[in-house]
Image (cartoon, rainbow, N blue to C red; front, side):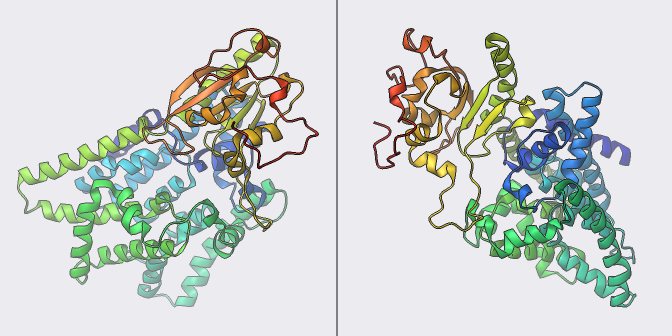
Length: 529
């Protein structure tokens, strides 16, 4: 049975590699695949987090090793470079799923809840540090010593800490419990187990990071310095303190939030009976409380508490099932499966897929352009920064530029990042930042959301739309329903032949449309007139 459960989870996670084809968060690409691509092939963009030294190379280096093997075998195609790292993560997640099953006393409800979780299906094969963090948490929980003196759980906890330091938060209540119940003196346990394991894993992490960063560095220190002491995270958005309770946790659990709340109430009410569940619930509440203090919030930050929430819910449902009717059990199971399947299917294959599809298309489009014009493509992404994957999904050393959005690391007064500057005045930014002479120096390809077309219609008159990709049913001011790919028309032909695009009609652009490079840029000018 145990082997069958593992193979079931492995098949499910690998299936998600091919079924989940949408964009979730930039970190899936920019903090893993992009970094690994740079390590393996010598080109790829490093975000400010890497130059500031707040990220660990442990995870990207593993993917880079996979890339190197593919390169040596001359198998470094875009398809394999994008699929194999996800299959690797799927293997980690499947093993973690199996350990969750073992930890849950091989409960059928534990298999069902984990397999039907929309969130874990959605992220379980993504190359996110948060996904690896959740997998390591499951493995550690499966060997946590409720009735023994073992400290083996500290190894995956330590690895997770050096991958992402905040992953230690859920373990604070559990480690305090472990120390309190141990028959060993506290000092001995801390020095000979906690500190020793931390030093060994830390030495490995520091060695790897120092090697790739080029100088001695302790990334967890810089991570805490920037994210906690300097509060850089708030640059990327702030939420009220109750957001994790009102939105984050419900989003994480989906329909399972209902039995989880009932299980939580029962756990608190009969905490002397459900001591293990009460401690686990305390870990969840402690984590949510700590994260609620921080200004920047994302529901993916709660991924490490997902297995704990599912465990509490599975244990409750297993006890409930002993007294419930068969019809009630089937109703609950079908309801959970239906709702979670619909959510997983929509966000996994429909919502936010255009920014991934367009880059996959770019990989072949840039080759076609080079073959047709005997010239390398130059690609400009006029969209919110990090909206798409980058070199890891194109795998060609062509010129690519996107709108930057680094936080105010230099503490400049009235700081506005490049992306915000662009959206304040799109045509003004274009006149100021793109070359005027010759027109052939302009980007060969543009990638933008359809909502931007009216604001830059004049500029688009020398481009023709080559492809359009559905992105979302819920467009916003900057994120459109479709992602458009444009290719520059030959400069000499741009003045003579008609130009057809799907944008609002605009007169063919001429050199006079742009401000002279020596002319003073006037931000008050009506650039979109």
